[in-house]
Length: 380
Image 1 (cartoon, rainbow, N blue to C red):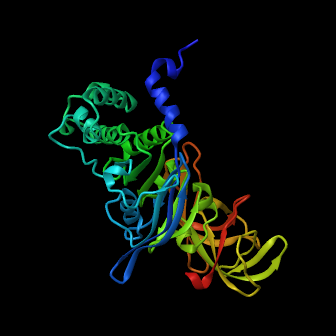
Image 2: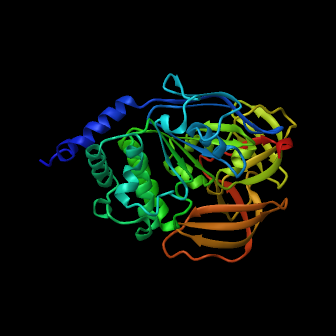
Image 3: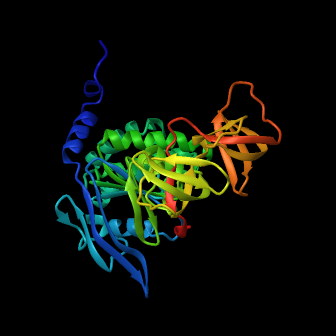
């Protein structure tokens, strides 16, 4: 039999166990921060469970970076509390909050070696040289950069610099890990590797973590839960699947993924859901969430992968004019216009060797088991 991880790296295994036992929740209790008469963060309450990674996702100016800086202690909130475990940390300076931070631009010291960068936080805390050397070696092994200790940041690739920044943040054994747009400076082909690496390390050390990003793919790929923010507030908090499949508001629906918005009116309300007549001609029965009365104008949101093309007309099929089809990776994306003038995108799995097709008439139908979302038309 092969050796266990504990036998190969006993110090790493013992640290992992200790950290897992010590994983503590992070609570934001009514946190507000104002600039003049406006609110950058507006009464945000959020609990990040011990060992959980929550992504703060939203457009520029939504308050997510301000919230991260409040947790780190770089700015003081106007109202509310930041609590780790059961201990408020608002009065503590940044260097006493036991928080590790990975910045968007890595923020490595260019005149220091990799080993010196990783040891910086330990030295600032007064750790002995022996402890520093042991921890640096451990962190280099953790991020798989054992042979790079004596290099300077300029001698590293972007992905390697990101690993060093992670190692420096982990070296102090933080109670909370903050990730500020951690993949923004990386080339696209490196992002997936680093997403996997960060998730691996976050799980290995059972770290409670918050990641700030405006990239929905990043949030969907590695977060346990996502807090979608707009105008300083959390619009919805849930798992990536919940956020994508059951958006609570039209803003969340439009910000996460791609969707087709079709105008319609509720014809009837029954035990099986809402019977909706679309302006483009089809009639759909939708088991959607929400409370709508007969006659209410609504917007039906359908994800591109929730639709398929058909050749024949039917009451529940939407007449569309097919403009073009594009093979994108493993999907074939059909671009079409509905009879009511709405632009429609339909995504279907692409068969090997399938080519894009030209314009023509067709009918769009709901895919089996599709569950479109329903919103009040007035909220558009």
